[in-house]
View 1 (cartoon, rainbow, N blue to C red):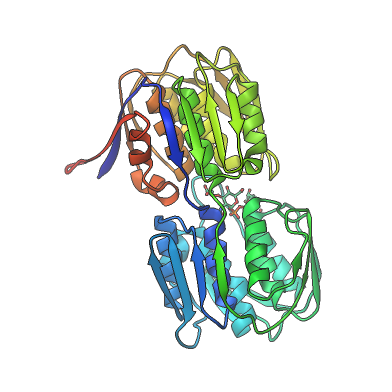
View 2: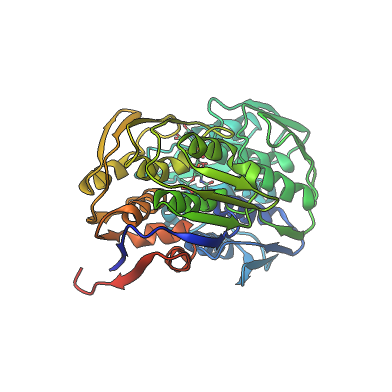
Length: 420
Ligand code: EPZ
């Protein structure tokens, strides 16, 4: 089993280049099912989740070739309506093939994605929206069986601005008959990136990035070339590595506007931040000021940065509060941080973080990719050695995390433990 081993308390200094956004690449790869001509996607992060999505697409009739961050996709034969069970269970984003398959085939049979460590993660909003567009949906033996001769436009109100539901419904509406309006839509940059890709291949999507998205259905999409936006979550993770160790990190290939809530929060905590066209730099000396963080749908503070910023606040000069309002169970990292000497109490959606002088290295376990990143950040600032297991989670969302941290001074490596 692999472990990440860190000798902490080295101030990290230097530049880190970010990859393309995982959470933009995955829905856009699903959207290539809508294309009747070949597509070329650039800036795709070389991650395990991208390989999983590629496997899903190949299993239902696409030919997907990945080379140096570029993916070429073309339809190689008739499309299948059922992606492999293990791929959907392994990665929730596989569920995003539902909308495109309904458009192309008028039917789809998709395993219900399971819950995971951060919550139950239902798909009721996806299904309710598709039913509003005329799809018949049946749940049978853990599968979603969907049928629709041709989807019709509808006005859909999302009870929660779900990223995945917005994406699935936007793709389904792109070839529906008539106009669809999605109210209370998710506004994440990755949703905007998907809309921009859809418009590149022939769709008519307006209003992405606001809470009201209007889609006029069209048929016969072509192909095209598209470059994925940079990964704001990866960028923020490296900025936190710099300020949590009392160093100075500049991340390149990032869109600063995608990080507004996060940058405001770390500045409130005492970090020095500077931004340019495609870079953000952050530095800090000494301990952070305590702050209150409430995770919200974009443009609020991202839930995917909740665990990472909690590591940073574990050694603040006072007590911080984190309120997780997006997922119902996203505090698995609290126990692991407390094993490193943190003083954190999680109750319901609230975590109270009483800042300590310093953390001490320990053996800890990552339960999901963002919790894994948080534990690496904790190890970088802790006295002594930290061993993080559950490395496979981390590799889902961070390309060459260890190599990139090494390049800015971290004493970090991956170790394989035979008997572990
Ligand atoms: C996307 O997941 C991201 N994944 C997640 O990132 C991210 O944490 C999440 O959005 C929130 O920003 C990808 O983009 C591949 P949601 P998604 O639907 O679409 C509830 C990472 O670390 N909900 O916005 O699954 C749900 O239970 C991952 O990269 C319903 O109730 O998130 C949750 O509480 C983790 N019914 C909330 O909405 C539904 O039908 C937000 O979920 C759908 C969602």
